[in-house]
Image 1 (cartoon, rainbow, N blue to C red):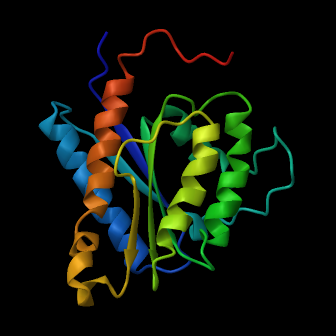
Image 2 (spheres, one colour; image 1 turned 45 degrees about the vertical axis):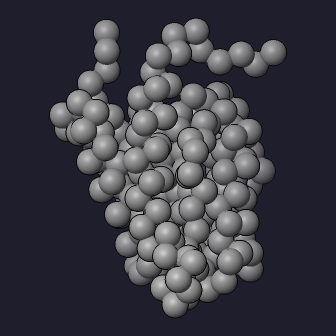
Length: 196
């Protein structure tokens, strides 16, 4: 049976509503538009603001799930794709995003994320955003997620003053579009994923 629904969850790792939240929202809108274009009648998108969850620091466990994260993890189990968005803090993702990825170890330990699509968006005041986006995607790859082309996006807040960087004003939408395309392509894999 062909699955005619699609669920994309955005993970907002910013402690404040601002540029990161706006970029994620636009990427999720792009994802929903692309899903409808590809025949998904009612795609589901949702942004999860990590600052509103109240999650504790990761305790090193591969099996514990804090009560605050249980509803989010349940949504992630059912979702097809994810878009992570973070401000850049010292060449890396925010502490909120890092803590959340640490907790994803619970889902990774049971291979519950493998075969799902993901992308990353980073926003900062220098060109270190690429490193921040990559630092999100590297553990996700290890957890079995698939990363489509052009889905490690960063925006330098000073980009509009640099004519060679105008792509930074629009390309965050590609993250949403390409995550959807890969999520739908991954559905054709009926054999699962080999671990050895």
